[in-house]
Length: 384
Ligand code: CTP
Image 1 (cartoon, rainbow, N blue to C red):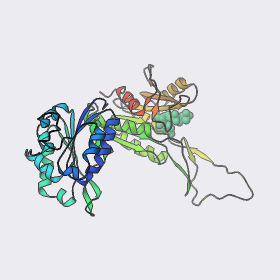
Image 2 (cartoon, rainbow, N blue to C red):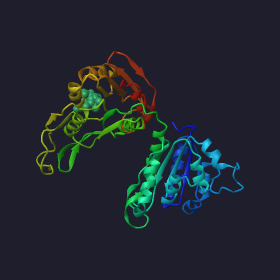
Image 3 (cartoon, protein in one colour):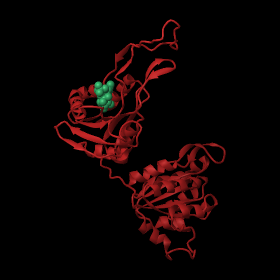
């Protein structure tokens, strides 16, 4: 999605600047064309060589430098860029940006930028809490083209701990993806189950499966990018716990997507102490009882406007079994993946799916990344 996108990164002089080369690498890997502008102080924290090497372009740090490609880089860069990210944005730079002060490469470039800008502040917690900083952040947050991020909480470079950390590069990358995604699910509430369930045997053991939750996480991420309000119920909890959470969240949701690998059975009882080996027997018999079927439970309480999407992981008679499940659980669509397809299933970053609809139709897709599959699933849900 970032293929060919022009991303302009503005770095100011905070210690968090050391994290920006990693973000540039992630953006370039995703296919974006990245250019960098910095304040003079930023180059105390990260070198021009690093930024130039990773972006593949001259860094714009000095308005009057003779290496600049144009005489007016602060005008040509904003017109080149599809999006600008200012990270880290120090208290000083926030103050300048909010008040129209343009006295260096970064701030003159920002002043001329009329396309989307994401600002990621970073500073000491006392500076963050100062009325001036708070006022500037509030003000910038009201601008149509600006997404004003908040600082994260945690250990700070000055040795204290508090609010003032820059958001991590992965989070900033996600914000950039979101900025390029049309908000087609704005106002929609979507519940997603994902990952494995675990059923306790005794205080140190449980029964589970090989699900990693990658598919469900990719769907949740794509829903968020499209503007939906997402409740992600991620595994490593019992089927009963997951069922209770799903039922509660489904009450006012528009859609539930059930990607979790739910254990169909659990031990009849959880042993209070560790189950021991016995000298007189080399066998252990476990008595299992059936778990609630979350999909079927939601299928029973589903209202006409709600959409219910399930998954089916099959090894044989795939279409037939999946259609049967869709009917039995009152699903609107079922995403079939076969364990027989190489590269599809637990743990892989790719998946090969067939979408089956309750009107009898079906759509087949080739092996794709789980991100791409997530997009296809969402494109096929009717949430009008
Ligand atoms: N599912 C569920 N609760 C369960 C079992 C399954 O919500 N107790 C959901 C899964 O999340 C998936 C769909 O039902 O969306 C189908 O799951 P699958 O394991 O393929 O089917 P089962 O109904 O468990 O049938 P079987 O194991 O016999 O193939």
